[in-house]
Length: 284
Length: 76
Image 1 (cartoon, one colour):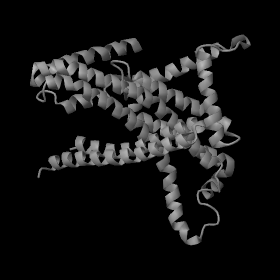
Image 2 (cartoon, chains in turn purple, red):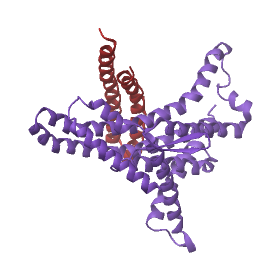
Image 3 (tube, one colour):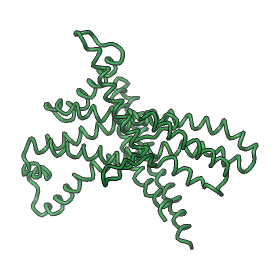
Image 4 (cartoon, one colour):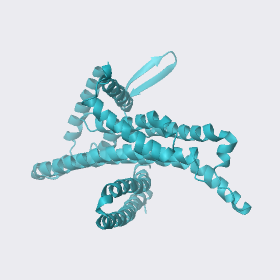
């Protein structure tokens, strides 16, 4: 069924590409429209369950694909641990990353009981990385370039932060920890709203950072590739000249996207760990 | 002037100011990192890691304002 959906996406995409390359100039489809069409979500199929109309969109399909790939990778990595063998290949690679997350990110930032959060942080890291990487394939979409997906990730992060604080200090103690002790009373009316706002802005920043990084990368690639029809509409020779330049630049930006995918996955995980540590073991 | 034209104009200026701020910040960060590595080559790995994280955070702030500029262009 996923194969069918992917084929349908590819067919739609090819049909629309044929349409847009015929209107080469800002006349039929303006460049802005083509750009938005490529980076935003589209409904592929609507599942009607009773009175619910559930749209299955392109980003949802790739979201589920990314999640399935993460689970598959984990299962395959586990397989190399059978019979107490030393893991090789995929198992070793996954083990390196998981150990890195456990030692450098979880334990360093959350403290002695940081290991409990390792599965959560590993889920974040692998999901964001794999979601970004599958977005680089042709005819695919990056699920994390959808603000709803990053909103979900940020909500999970938010719940983890509050859970960490409430588990160690109770609900009242958790909110008391927001303001440093020994604070002059006249500062309290300022500190309390600022700190409460801070609880919400931290995951919000995580959300927007990841979303904007993924979206911007794809927009730049699409714009660079759209230079070809735009130049071709002015003069056919310009179109031919633009092809190697455009492709070269787009390839370079795709390489940069690989790096950005890794860095953004790492930053999301690291910041989540730092914020969990700030609530679980406040320095004051 | 047309409201839409003003919006495009503002988006352009906004994007330019954004990249000025981001490049200045990341440039200073890179300079400090280079100096740190030059003083203590043994700490190069740690400094590189911290530099990447800080660059990611600065870019995160950049993208906030970039989203504002994009919204100016896209929303009527």
